[in-house]
Length: 110
Image (cartoon, rainbow, N blue to C red; front, side):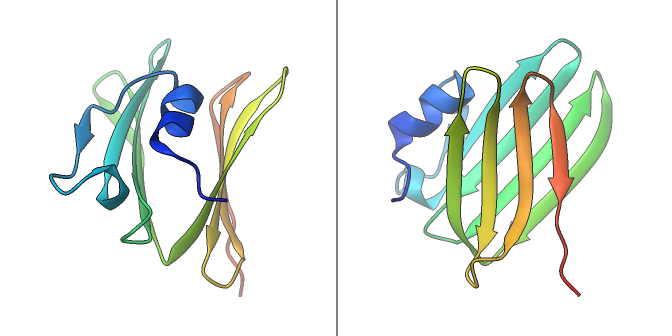
């Protein structure tokens, strides 16, 4: 099941800082702040894209864009919050963890 806008707002604990003029399904950007870390993550289910920028203060640590994304799976437990990003072939592209600490695992298949 595809998460709704409310699911993303609940997961990221914030309203979108930007939404596509045709609606959130074409693109919504969320900004997550944890101490010095800032994550700007743009979810675009209709475009099958996801973009992530990870900042520490003024320094950009990482910028990544996934294409052919078919599934965003939000996992909330008492101990952690994760979003799994999967491709159209159901392959795992990445796992972004927000709690207890920010962490990003990028998965590549060869």
